[in-house]
Image (cartoon, rainbow, N blue to C red; front, side, top):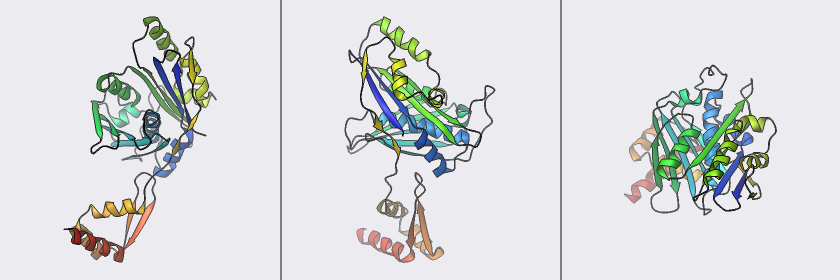
Length: 295
């Protein structure tokens, strides 16, 4: 089971989130038929967005992470809510690159080192809040740490990883975000930094069988803390036929009438889960009439 653990120091000044996301990232790979490099990128985004979802204060809030770089992968997008539901897509999931000299999947080159990382917070207000920073590495985790530091003035340690076997299957995925939320003794900062520097990459630790509880214990080594009960994470899409209809309506009358002339049936495919919604000519003509009646 994929899940997240939240830990907080006794003095409430350090908070850490550690997530295991192997199953949901593998589900995303299957849905998008993603290459190893592509799912490594999307898996990192899904993992970190799932963690940020658990930082939200209200159930109706949602958060999204979007990375647009100058590399061949194109747009990487993930969104999550506070209940542990996460979904995402990648524009060119078929793109794959040779591994780096040390054998790692070359996510930075696939995303590109020039571009923008955006965090979009839908707090249920009229307009969502959007924060943007330039990419600093293309590896996603370092870029998100840069976002926290520069857009939210929140010092953070961020890591995420995906391990792929020889058949292209995701066999481990996970990540963490550690934040100092108020002023703290320099000795504790030094200790925390050393603890984090001594950690292996998240995907390696999870592959070796370490649990989020054990990873968070290593993060807080020699620092008094407590952690909260595990919370389930899952890949979950909220698409509906009504949302598919809205996608068609957004095309406008002229384009819909053109589709009716050319196609017997029209399919709307959800970019997050791959589900296909079928609309007959009769269905589309009804939508056209509804649009005209509102004009």
